[in-house]
Amino acid sequence: MESFFRIRKSKKGIQEAGAMAAAALIIVITLLIVGYILFLPPAEREKLLSEGDEDENATEEEIIEIVLSETPERIYPLTQREFEQELPSVNIFIKEEATELKKVDSLFTSRSLFSDKNAVVEFEIVDVEDIKNVLLNFVVQESEGRLIIKLNNIEIYNREITTANIQPIELKEGLIEGTNVLEFSVSSPGATFWRTNKYALEDILITGSVVDREAQESKLTFMVSQTERENLKKVKLHFFTDCDLDSVGKLEIWINNYNLYSAIPDCGSPNRPIEFSPDKLVPGENQLIFKTEKGSYLIDHIRLTSELERVEAKTYYFTIDQEEFDDIEDGYLDATLYIRFIDDETPKEARILVNGLAFGLDQTDIEFEKVINTYIVKGNNALKIEPDEAIDVAELEVRLE
Image (cartoon, rainbow, N blue to C red; front, side, top):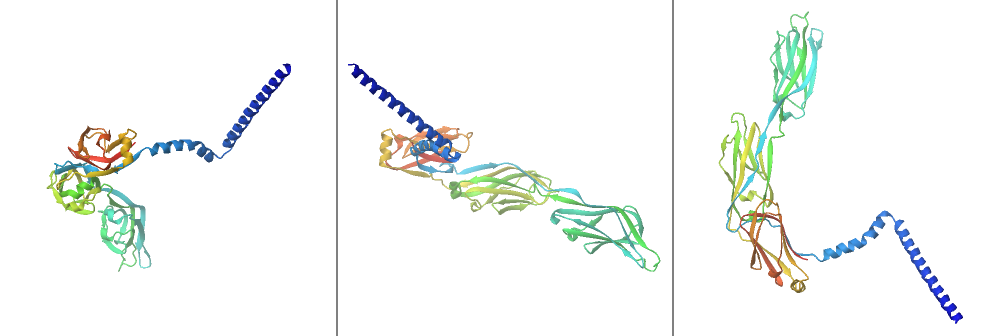
């Protein structure tokens, strides 16, 4: 009996030792794994630890299937034929700013029988087309004979000066270049060969008016949907101009690089609408450009009115196979209609038909969702949107989830 208890005690000790050894082995393996992960490069460690999340995300994505995806843009009501699009006001102008082009404190030129001393002043013009009213001015301190001035080798002045101050000398635009040279000389003493003709000038100043064209034109962008472009019958541009008739030049209006208008408009009153061919518009983004060559214009009450041919509601098709249809009927899948609009301010009212069955949409929210399980059929499905007024749709989807 005593030996029996010793045997049981021995077996129990062996079992406990085995359990302790197994536990120690598990701890060692765990430490080795943790150590292995810790000593991995950061990129590899992150990849290893994120594999579980990726698998979970992949599983989540797999249960969402998009069977219809469209970007309808603007959808029009079937009964409406005329539409109006208002555009913001624009202010275009060209201004001239007086600028100092060159300043020289003093210069001296002389001529005698035996010597001839000329003086040269150089100045640069960055943009010749945008410089106006270039003038030369100076103060005469000493004078004898006739002062001769050449601009780029063309004589522009030749006379005797008897006063200290003179009227500014115009440097004509046709003679102005990028790099310009003014040469000052004096006439020969002639028969009085013993004399020396000379001029001493101070405060030599060249000024000009630089044309600022930064606000010369203004561009407006507007959108035209594919449906609208395909059904356009006629388009008119309306605008009002506020300007000074005596100080403005021609107003030019361009649509997508096509010149619609080039004239001096009626200042202070609405202008006659400009009708142009729908061919000048393109689906998507269009540009309307206002430009002037002189003066200032405020152009407001800008709007485009368009008349459409008969509009047919576009039908969007999607397919539901047998397995998907069974899952929808059994409650494993939901068919969800999702619509995203371009804003959350405009009222949106429409009648939506799925396979001829209708339901309403009436909201201002930017998104609309509705489960349409009871509207779905096996095979081809058809969807139409018939708005009460034109609505802009950014995204249209039917999802199985």
